[in-house]
Image 1: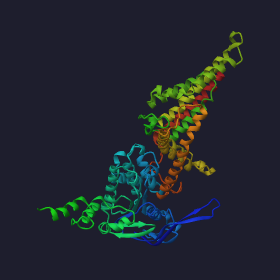
Image 2 (image 1 turned 135 degrees about the horizontal axis):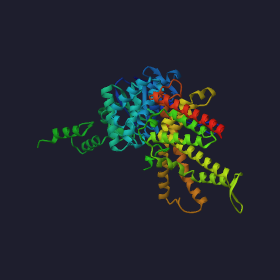
Image 3 (image 1 turned 180 degrees about the vertical axis):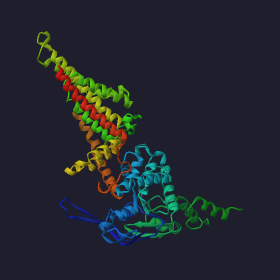
Image 4 (image 1 turned 60 degrees about the vertical axis):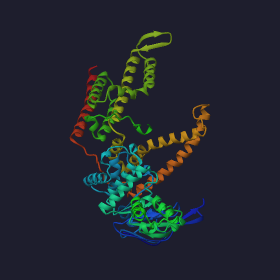
Length: 284
Length: 270
């Protein structure tokens, strides 16, 4: 679905006369291989290059070096740009700055309208997309009356109506309250499970990563760790080295182990924790 | 709450006028305004008045709502009438020192007053029965022919609808910035006009910065959703003329014809 090799991107800072002042290498030799139907999370602290990856996948930025294929299209080819954007939709961080229309259903229709989909088709696509994210009841409302989580779900519906193969979400929950975060994460998990849409979730909330198929940790423009959440979180020292935290339960298990209590590596959920703890210390 | 503000003055109701194609309403308003200048006798005013009253009744918009639109031009209305009364020459019917009131002056004032009154009521009837969104799409479709003479109709319409979406957001933001500045001791309410304007600078600078940032992000989001201008774009709700729109056009033509003919006839009889 998404395949990158030796991908690099440089932001070039210029002074007023247009002379090169400095070069920031935001991505440096990134290799990615994301399969169809995967739910992949990219983790990294600020400035690790994770948002740049998202923009590369959507062909908003062109690779400085290396190649990136999305759904078989080369992102450096001008003529494939619209195909790429249609197959890999993108949801941004700020829910307000990505909704275009002042009525929910018209906003969802924006994408298909741009693709030149016939009117009747648009109507059914909009109905389907709103149904999918559970926003049908707000069809005719103004986005200004919705909560952050609802706006973000409308944004997802707007992408869904374009029938993408893959959705890239660039910190979609960073500006939401805990309830909104839960709504959005549940929605994308559902889309992944039931519609088979490939999800690439960029985040710095560890709790959102736990249920993913695969986690990619980025630091300094490079991919530094890759694996299932359990593999990744079994290496707490390494995680902390990249200025990231562990999920709370994992952290607790980790601390307990240091104090001599026998907890397994990479505990990911409260249930797992309880089970592991009870099996060791439960019967006394 | 700021986010509840309605732009324009749309009055939601379920009437034929509300359901009409916005293009019909735009044309009708334009023609109604033109028709104001097509007649010269009171008969014309009577016809225009009766037709307008009929449309108002059909539109189900309460009359006092209509009068709200008049508030802003009340002064202009009185001013025009007073000028017409005192400054028109002709047969004098009342004279006191330097003040002269003439027959022509009175009739001119009355006609002018009615004309302005009709103009305002007529155009606010359109904005009361049409949402800003409908108006925008009506203009886009109705003025599409202007693309031939290189008027960027689609772009203008897109800008208008984005402005409609972002005005409440930016107003909320202004409010937030003002509160933040007030919390740090800024004073917007006291002092001379000059000082008060100066105090607004620290509000507008961050507001502009944030507006540009929003614009940048929105542009990126629109591109990511495959927006590439007007070419090859379809619409979820394309404007389509229905039977009632055709009938309205016919009625409109009949109205204009009636105005012109009666004016000719009455003038010939007098």
